[in-house]
Amino acid sequence: MNDHSEIMATSIKVDKKELIRQAALSVFARHGFYSTTAQQIAAEADVAVGTLYNHFKDKEDILIHILDTEMNERQAAVLQIVGKDLPMREQIKQIIAFHMERAVENKFMMRLFLGEELHLSGKLEKFTYKLFKEIPDRMVLMLQAAMDRGELRRADPLVLAHAIMGANRSVMVRASLYDDDAAKRIRDHAAEELTEFIWQGIKPT
Image 1 (cartoon, rainbow, N blue to C red):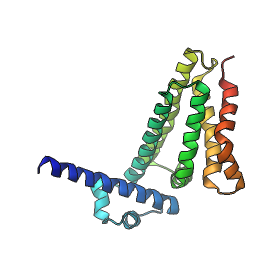
Image 2: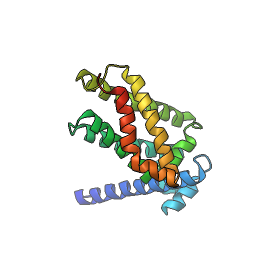
Image 3: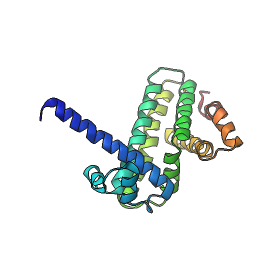
Image 4: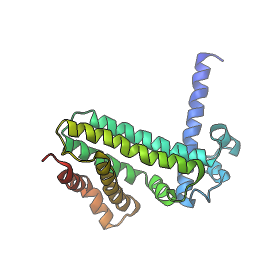
């Protein structure tokens, strides 16, 4: 196989894996993770069931891939915002706005995550526990660095990280899983209002 053929084969493999990821996300969100079968995912992706197993060991691996992909993409976006060297308050606002927009655009992901997070077991449970530890740990590093620069008041960065995540999560759930007037109101004002709420608690004294 020449270099061009190898590149084409790799591209097709990646495309199939992404196709399966998107199909599984849709089916998981509609039916729930544990009620979903490999046959349903294959039908949604319009591929043979065997094709699923060419890319994933089982549906647990598919869900882990879905969550891992989402977290990696979010982390990359956050790092890009932090790298702009903006004032701390503006960084917080842009990060919140990004997560809000992402949640609204990816309602399937929100429904899947919220519907299954407390019912996972085995390797899925281990993965999500690891994820829930890593996300605030990354935030701790950002908060601690900002405290060292004098941009935030001195506090326990781990407690602040979890408090910020909790507030952000509650607002995102209401804004992304509903489509009523209140949800629209939250989407319109969340970035500014939530930023101000957080900023008043962590700004330098």
